[in-house]
Length: 269
Ligand SMILES: Nc1ncnc2c1ncn2[C@@H]1O[C@H](COP(=O)(O)OP(=O)(O)OP(=O)(O)O)[C@@H](O)[C@H]1O
Image (cartoon, rainbow, N blue to C red; front, side):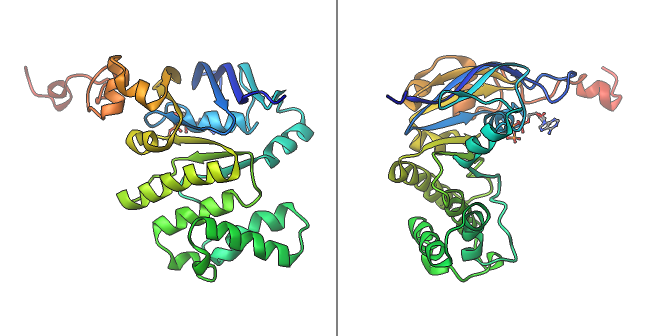
């Protein structure tokens, strides 16, 4: 029987170089069929975590396990197998601006499969239909809005029917309505395709509308809290409350450590 867990991050510590640790003893479990958020402010290591799951870098300590298999970055065959099962929606979509909407969604299918053109056409139209943009297939990327571009990137991320879809800041730069549309789509696509989704974001409220579970990371690559949106909303931990309510100051300081302003400006005190 398949285990409930699709990915396990087990006491992972990681730094791009020896001088600076980015993730410190982080443990997380991503359950099959669920949408899980990794929340946290800028620079706390969220994207880095996605790279470790994709086997781009090995952890310095700890393990990353994908569907029961240790992600060993030296094992190229295993990495290829794991990556075939992942779909990734990058920050800001990264679409090919000189190609049409259709060509963008068809791209991974042409790269990774030998499917005949008639089948590629049907799959692309189905994926575009799922995000409500079948009618926009022949438009160029330069002709679509930011919200549409995000949905096209979503259609492209699901083109190969991934078991795991990783979204890096899917709401960045979107207006509130497009944000809501994108969030609902992430949920809908997850459930309709029976996949598992990870959403990296600093948008707590948007994520809480759609996720089953969330991890909260803090500067210095620490995991500070985890739970369902309801559990985290009830938390009385000051760090959690500051982040969830978007309070400007709390345990996480607004100001980067600095000498007093007067001193920096040369004003005698
Ligand atoms: N390839 C790299 N080499 C060296 N340092 C890196 C590299 N990528 C990221 N970093 C550093 O690692 C830290 C964590 O970055 P990361 O992108 O994982 O954070 P994040 O939480 O995703 O932030 P954001 O939301 O701003 O993208 C940052 O300080 C960043 O400068």
